[in-house]
Length: 228
Image (tube, rainbow, N blue to C red; front, side, top):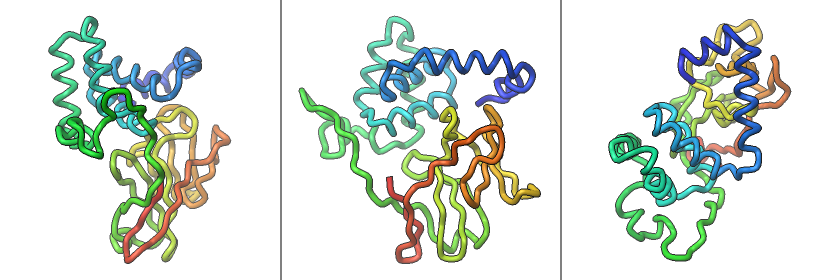
């Protein structure tokens, strides 16, 4: 969320809450993949790079293929025009996502479905996030792994891994949201609606009642792995 939008949320919380509720309700009959594809198009139309990156990752996470993203951009040509589509493509290529390599798009096993094939959601698998010795005991760190934001908290040889998306409204919580000096311990506050979370337990301790999404994790050969 931009600094300006964060300011409006704090300056006019009641009005902005109605606005976000409207957006949520307006898309309640859409599946998550379609809803995020539409959000991608709106961010391209507004040429909001940060928003484009955020919703593109969400669309991919919900099972959208790179080919579907490109098709959505091209189908929106009457509204976007070539200039904005090229701008969006430049942003996407700068993200170095493996799904958008020419090899993937042109028919390699990792590429998009061709012809009448139906896209299938990738099965959960273990992914190497970082070396255990890079995360000091009792500390937390935010990292990006294969297009997904994660918060990692270490307790000895055990590492808790949380999704960086707020469970309330799927806001991608940034590193700056961490408060290591809090009297409550290490806390994390979502910038959109100020839901506050205890990093050790993952519980929501203020404003909301839903905990952070914890991912299955393990330490293997000195490396932290998460499964999704």
